[in-house]
Length: 195
Ligand SMILES: [Zn+2]
Image 1 (tube, protein in one colour):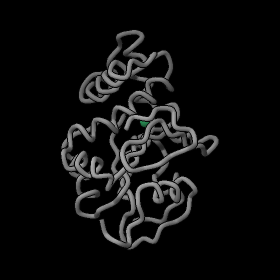
Image 2 (cartoon, rainbow, N blue to C red):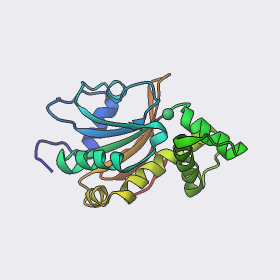
Image 3 (cartoon, helix red, strand yellow):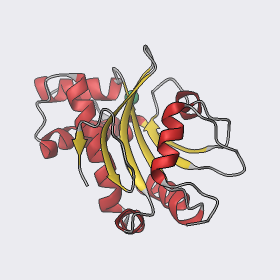
């Protein structure tokens, strides 16, 4: 890790508090849902360029997502990856419909919904609300990034990088942390401690 880069915990605390980072290079990667309707910079009150922003609908993970995350942690040496879901996500609503009524969308959207369903199963979640599906999927997405990227897993194992799995509520500007992985401390509001 470069000497001028703060650690994961400090970076997360600053982001959560909305304290702006200098913008000469990104200080964290944010993997958010594409339909959140709000930019990562706005959520964390950061200037353009302070965050490496990656987004897909419903947090579907493919090799392009993994390449972006690996570039952030390996080349830019960011100490923090935030998996950021949001309130009342249409993708999670679609997953809830699939869970309760066996209704799946067609085409490529189906894959994203199936991934969310797998997250509900893997976490043993109730799957009885959008919030329950979202929480399960955000945590499983963070774990899945590590499972599918040996480079990221190595960084997390060495405690050179941490992952925060969180959701944002645009209505009350509230950030809820659902899990932390690796070298990031979080004392307030962690619902699931995974590592
Ligand atoms: Zn969404």
